Image 1: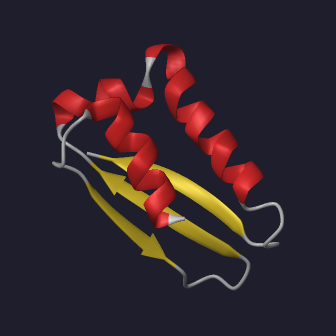
Image 2: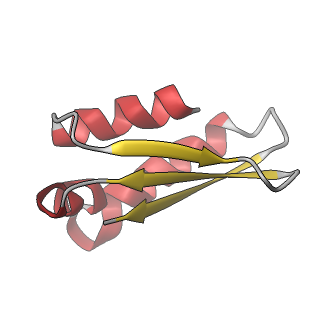
Image 3: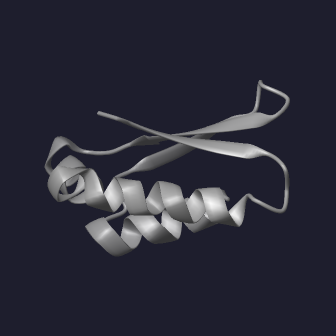
Length: 76
């Protein structure tokens, strides 16, 4: 999933200035944390949050077969 998130976000920002970490401390959920520059935050979130919502929808559908929930958090 980390590669999928990296691909989706890099297609939005076109930079390598972001960091992705995965927190697998919960048994049925994995939290994917994305840290990016302040300038790229607007591109990742999108107008009215449409871009980040689309990325979360793709993650939800990609994880449907695994039975594990993936939560995407975006931090500055």
